[in-house]
Amino acid sequence: MGNIDKKFIVLGGAGDMGSNVVKYLHGLLGGESDNITIGDYRVKIAEKKALAIDEDIKVIKVDANKDRELIKILEEHDILINCIGPNFKYAIKIVEAAARAGINGVDICDDVEPTLKMLELNKTDSIFRDITYIYGCGWTPGLTNILSRRASELLDSLESLLIAWTGDPSSEGIAVIEHMLKIMTGKVASYKDGKIIYIPAGEGIERLKFPRPIGIAKVFDVGHPEPITLPKFITGLKNVSVKGGIVPFWATNFFKKNYVDKNRTNTPEKIHESALELKKLSQTDLKNAIVEIPSTFKVKATGILEGKIKNIDFSGAGRMEQLTSLPAALAAVMIVEGKINSKGVLPPEASIPTEYFLQEFQKHGVKINIE
Image (cartoon, rainbow, N blue to C red; front, side, top):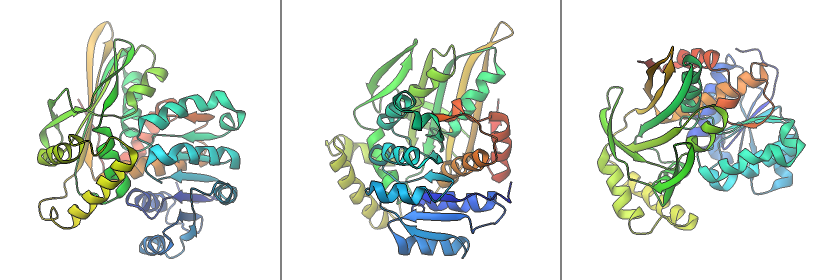
């Protein structure tokens, strides 16, 4: 990688995840920075983040709510990486702008509602079929989808997937906090016996083993898109569930008892208000109680190999920002290098060559265990 003469724009590049995408993209391009632009409405913050990485990284003001201006800016670039959140508000808006601008893209959307709409875009207009746009290409979904696809390649048939993760509560990004509240609220998608079902968030508690230093942790049913996309692109899948939890578990209980159970997360407006309050608490009252620890992932696949039942268990650990940002940056570079050739608006499992991706991914400090 490196020596790529293409113009990248990272939308939301001043945020927690976006600034890390810029950092990893800069590294993947061999330190070349004159073809990286941060697009964000928080220009001063973006300039500070850019300067911390490389003084040659450009910054441009972008307001994602101004469609015409956004499309015009995108037309001046070759590929975008979208990190503007919350995803349930901006993911569809950005992919539509990318299609109208005629440029390729990657995003880290991890919400179910926009994912359902993304699945239908290729049917609606040829402008979506003419670009390569990979959605849900972060940590979970993203890395977990690619590992699920890899499991299907290692087995004769793949029947069931249990995807699980643990996150730490230290992120102060509003979009991250909003997402955590949203996926713990109401009913969430799961795939059972070949059908999508909706089950209450927070139920189905299990104690699973994760990589050190986490060890055994409690996880529960959460609202993530993997059960929506994976069965559509991996033939034969009968069951897909996603479980997550915040470590330490008291943080999960704090979110649930003080916000979810008190109906403070049942509308986008309430979620935003609660997220602002939680951000303030993380900087004041809860600051000393929150300890930064790695986030983790687990993909447990069950299928058939040579006529026998076979289990494959992938797992790993890293900083949340790393696990989310590196897959997006890597996928974008693979697109411009011609290593991803699929056209249309697609999830990672339908577009990314798994073996090459996982080899490159592990060069950056995250080991993927397989049992």
